[in-house]
Amino acid sequence: MNIAIIMLAAGKSERFKLQGGEHKLLVPIQGRPLIDYALQSAISTGLDTYLVTQPEETALHHLVAAEALITYPSRGLGESIAIAVNHTAQYDGWVVTLADMPFFSDPTPI
Image (cartoon, rainbow, N blue to C red; front, side):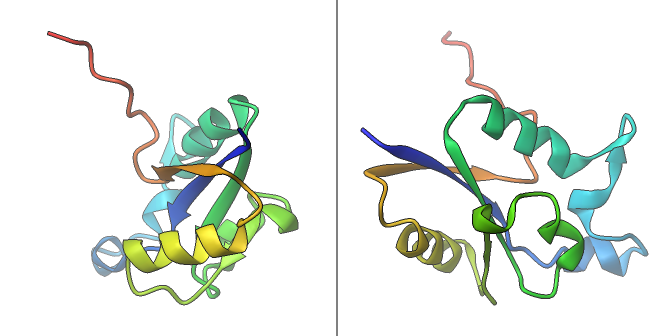
């Protein structure tokens, strides 16, 4: 089965920017932008990884190779997923991840 990772980073970070910050995915954590941790985890799986961003968020565009970048003026998560799946229709399935949750891990069973 041919699986790809779709990393959603198409939010506009409006609330964070209102507080005087830059895009929340670019905020440094231990010297690296937040999104670097999520991308590193996804890429380390060996699966093809695609990053979905807004067209105007050019600071995020250079983080992946051009062929792994999907830009679209998305209005929400569902639309971002649909655009990414359509763009990567050659795959049999997808793992959808959020770029702003880089330290998420499987919960330990109780």
